[in-house]
Amino acid sequence: MEYSIRYSTNAEQSLIDIFDYIRNVLCNRYAAISVIEGIFETINSLRFFPKKHGLCKERFLSERNIRSTRFKNYKILYFVDDA
Image 1 (cartoon, rainbow, N blue to C red):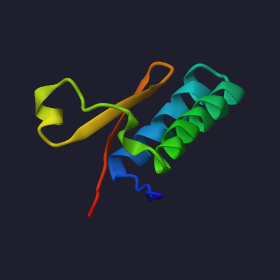
Image 2: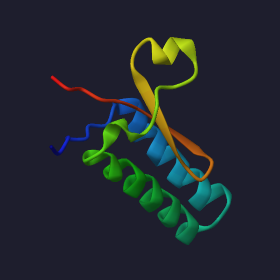
Image 3: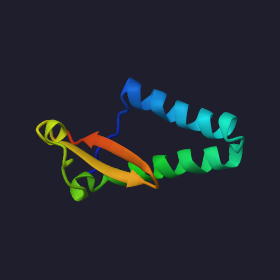
Image 4: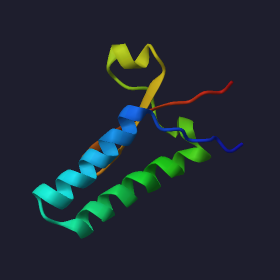
């Protein structure tokens, strides 16, 4: 089964902020592109096996069935909707 991926408004803005910071503050356009591509690849890998990562350790998040994975030093939070 293939799951679809939807981004929250906050997640979309976070990706823009990450890109802008690396490109404009750190002055490295190629690193900005590489990081964003890596984040997208990590997220897209969840399409087929979204439950391969455990629930978050933080009680507030785990009670809401929020899972997490990482790309480099970026923590990616997500929810699996089996409905």
